[in-house]
Amino acid sequence: AQSVAQPEDQVNVAEGNPLTVKCTYSVSGNPYLFWYVQYPNRGLQFLLKYITGDNLVKGSYGFEAEFNKSQTSFHLKKPSALVSDSALYFCAVREYNFNKFYFGSGTKLNVKP
Amino acid sequence: DSGVTQTPKHLITATGQRVTLRCSPRSGDLSVYWYQQSLDQGLQFLIQYYNGEERAKGNILERFSAQQFPDLHSELNLSSLELGDSALYFCASSVDRTDNEQFFGPGTRLTVL
Image (cartoon, rainbow over all chains, first blue to last red; front, side):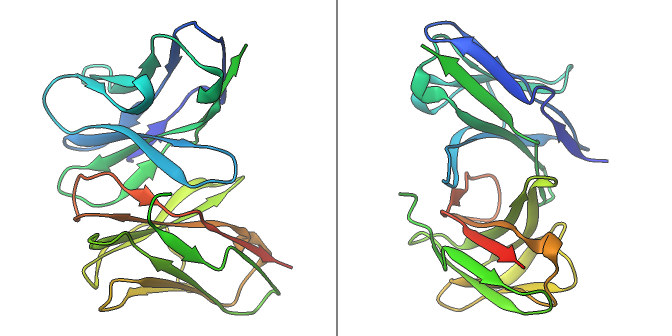
């Protein structure tokens, strides 16, 4: 079955430290991969996507993600976390040639001063 | 502001009733997506329309239906409402039907009493 897993419900990191939010996926065929962020009482906002090409994708607000086909992972990273990065992060996958979207359960990122 | 508008912002109704949620996509976007976000189910993809036609169907119940009108706005109809239908319903839009990022509206919070 197609799915997206975010193994951590919550990630805590100190401001200025690097952060990683993990995502693994299971789909048939080539995936389209996305990261979205949700702030309290707001809709989701697009951060970045991987369709093809370079495995390291750079996105909004200094975030980047690395696509690893052998590990079927698409982890979100940022070299230096900000308190304002605190939010709920969702990984999503769309199958090539298919149109359904699958979202992970979300990871709450807490960045402490 | 994503450019996607949803009305109403809040909706409170009783079990067995029927409601209609409305979404206006960003100017120029042809695809509209509907999602349900609840605490126990997470973010679930319901359905996608592209230029007036159904494009993909996710975990949408038979009691739910949607349509996209010639002016590209969309409506999600929920009928025979149950307590478990209480959730945040998001609409999103994108330029086309494939791999472009989605822009999410602020959501409609439905409470079924």
